Image (cartoon, rainbow, N blue to C red; front, side):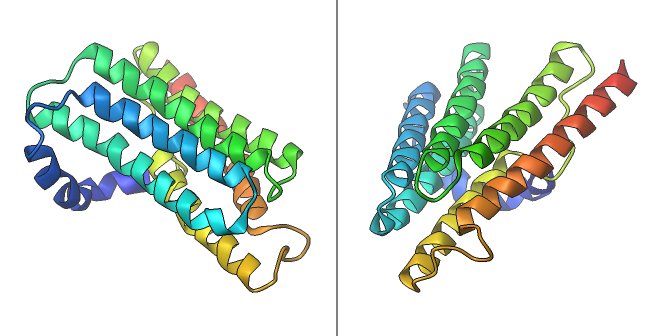
Length: 202
């Protein structure tokens, strides 16, 4: 994943906060991250344009806290298998909360949302399945979770801007529909690419 190459830059925004939380249970941060994912999906689902900036904030907090829990666990020697499991489960539910919120909103046709969700979940599944089979975690491709979160944040604001300009659609699709179409196409291609890499590894 492209963003993995820049994790050291993200650490500058995570490490100072993580150092101030020696008594915090990383699992609590993971749960709080999931709450913000739910709120992000809900605010988009309500289809009220003025709520889209709030959705942006919720998705950002979900992403930040999702990264912070691991940093706290690492810095304060609190990393556990249970915590890692909770983090992965939370990530998948967070993906679903946000993508379902978009899919059932007025900003996206449901059929587009369905294919986007399949692409996102299969991409994640292929990564962990490779690890479960002993090949090693498969994280190749350009549409990992970090990339998806950044895209969702940016284009949620673009959707807000478009609506404020009176543009409900551009060439027949809303801004968020273009995002979900991208997730559907690239996500499924990426899942197949990871599956191919895993097959070769086996």
